[in-house]
Image (cartoon, rainbow, N blue to C red; front, side, top):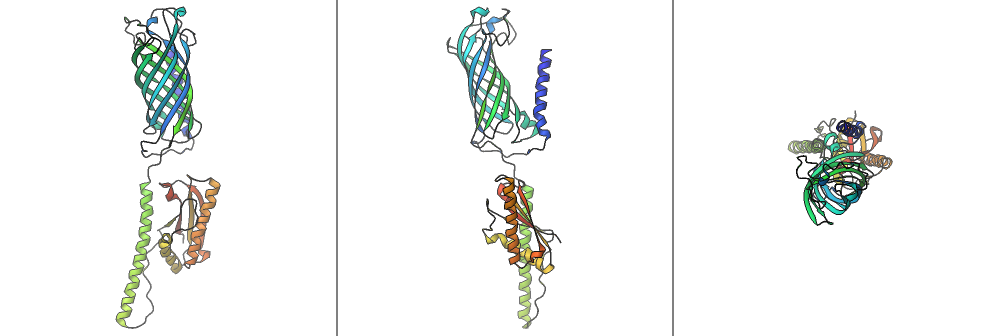
Length: 383
C-alpha cells in the first residue's frame, strides 16, 4: 500500500508540473550551446537520516525524526546542462551524521562526507519541450561516488538516486526541494554491519535526506531557437527577385538605347519591361533600437518596387517590426511604427504618392533567428 501511495503521489506531482504546458507558452526546439554556457551552482541544507547495515534485526524505530538516527547536513554542487533535458552535476554533502548501532541508546556522532557524480533528467523539457518561463521542473537523478567517515577514518563507495523539484524564481535563481538516497558500503559509519542478509538495503549503510536550497545559473542559462531556415530562404529569395527585376529593367533600357543608335533617330522610349512584383515583398533591415535607415544599400530593392508602384499606380503596405527579445512591448510598438514611417518617407522621395502608402506598426516579434532579422520593414503591394 505504501508503495502504491508513493507512486500515486509522484504521478500527481508530474501531472501538476506538466499542467503548466496547457497554457500558451513559448516552447521551441533549441540549438546546442557552447561548453561555457548553462553551468550552475547549488547550495542547500538538509535533514539526513541513517539506516545502517548493523541494525538489521534490531527492531529499531524507523522514524526519520528519531534523534539517534537523524540530524542536519549541508550540500554544495556544481553542474552543467548539456541539453535542456540532460545534465551532469558533482555534489558534495555531509558533515553531521549518526552512527546507528543495535540500540537507540548506543548511537553516536559520525562526521562524514559523500561525493557523487550524478546524471540529471529534466522530465518537463524532455517530454513537454523547452520552455524558458516554466515555473516548476521535475528532475530525477542517479549517480555513483565515494564517501568517507572522518570520525572513524573509513572510506566506502556507493550509489545515489533521488528527485529534484526546481521552482524558477528568475532567470538566474531557482528554489530547490530535493529528496535523495545514498546507498554505500557498510563501513561508511565506521562499523562493519550485517553480512548475512541478501537484501541490498540491509547490507548497506543508507543515507536518506530531504534538502532545501537554491540553484544559481552562471553565465548564459537559456537556449536559443534553432534558425528558421525556410523563413531565411524566403527572405533571401525576395531580395534576389527584386534584384533580378532591376536587372531586367536595365537590360530593357540598354536594348532601347542600342536601337536608337542603330536607327539614328529619336523615338519615344519604349515601355520598359518590368517584372511582376505583386507577390514579391521587399525587406529593409534596421540596427538595434534604431528607426533611421543607416545604409542606402538597404533601399536598392525598394527603388525597384517604387518604380513599379508609380507606373501601375499601386498601393503599398509598409509593415514595421521590432524584435521582442529587447525592449518592452509599448516601446517596440512605437519603434516599429517609426521604422515603417521612415521607409514610407523614402518611398515618397522616390515618387510614390503618399495617398498610395499604408503604414502599420506590428511591435516586437520573434519570427526569425537571429533576432536581428526581426528588426525590419516589409513592403507589400496590396492592389
